[in-house]
Image (cartoon, rainbow, N blue to C red; front, side):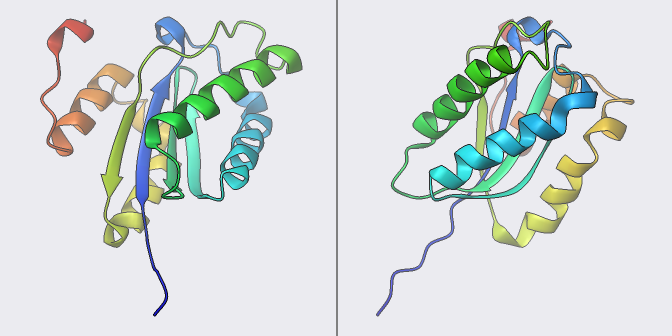
Length: 148
């Protein structure tokens, strides 16, 4: 008998101080770089997108990697790449912390569409509102000291 697995994660992380430093004119290069990191980890990236102050990543993560290590490697590697590439000159780094949520494969189409529509979503609500809503949706009580 073969071994089968599916570990779908919705990961969200923001820029340092939520500053709008990820300008949209160069995001395809950043997204390609993060896609490469994901492939190196023998994981599959279904969708990546974001706005100027945060990113969403939907990935099937290789089970040999702890989520904390996966996110750390993406944030550290992409931060170094961003600073070397000079594509986002105002970028100061990623914020400490992140959201990592396990998801059902049954929801993949809805999640892909949600991540794909980030620009439209953030014409209506802030990152903080979105993040609080995500925490509640995934059954997590937000610590209000982290929300203005």
